[in-house]
Structure formats: structure tokens, C-alpha cells
Length: 108
Image: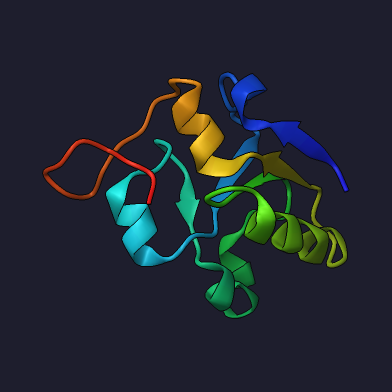
């Protein structure tokens, strides 16, 4: 399965979709700017929201859920790459994050 370490993901190219598959409360606490949010449990019913003409980087909290989603997407016609280390590594590397609340973005 294709993997890219979160710490090495610099700017997401315009032709790549960053898909965050964490739960709503995790997303609300902090996420990467411009990411697309579809929780893992809802993905099968929302595949039409994923662009079929772009590569997809898949991210979760630590890399486990995103690895499963990456395998699923690759088996169904997408070019998907797991962001290894997830949002924990993203945050630790000092990458940009935003929050849906009034608090400082965090990874929960």
C-alpha cells in the first residue's frame, strides 16, 4: 500500500484531495485546512463526493483507519495514499491546522 509520512507532506498539490476519515468530534477539534471530511463509517455511501480524476491522500488520527480506507479506495478505482502517522504526526511536524470551535486546534 502506498504510504507517505505526514511529516513529509508539504503543500498538498492542487490535483490531490486530502481525505480526513476521522469522526466528527475529532474533525471539529482540529484538521488540516482544505481537507475533505468523510468519516470512515460513512465512506461507502459518500464515494460520489470523492473526485475520481485526482489522487487521494487519506488521513486519520494515527494511520490505522486511513490505511484501511486507502486499501478500500485503491481496490475501487482510486489512486489513494495513506498519510502514515496521521494527524498526530501532522500536528507534531507543525503543519497548519484549523478548528471548528473557538479553541486552539488539537488532535484528539
